[in-house]
Image (tube, rainbow, N blue to C red):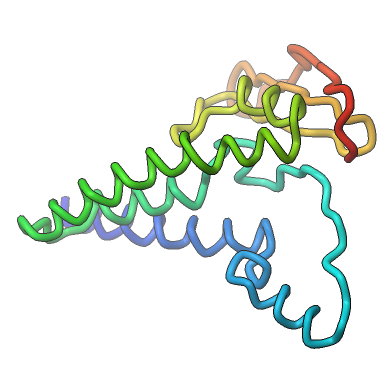
Length: 162
């Protein structure tokens, strides 16, 4: 059991690290913005995109934190308090702040993505993609591992630039 917890703990931190690089590790921590400012350049406008893990859950960084915090092999009272507090903070921040800002920035395109992709818990057998050129959000379902995938629905979000 202890080995399983260590594995889930490591998986959580791996998901956190990989997810930061998928959306721009240096941008996430403000380093790209500082570098561009020092060089006198403006930050280019970026469109809505869903790299790998972001096709499975909307907030893979937070999923990684949940896995790492809750699966610690030595759950002390102090760590439990920390885990409960950070879980509450993450849930409130994501749903009340981050998603509101993403809707303001990306509009209907993000609303459709939010409607189709779960926030934290992956749904087995489904993968999601947002096709950048057309703005289409497509759900793909696989009946069984190794089975054939089929498009279950495609919707184009109007008014959002890719």
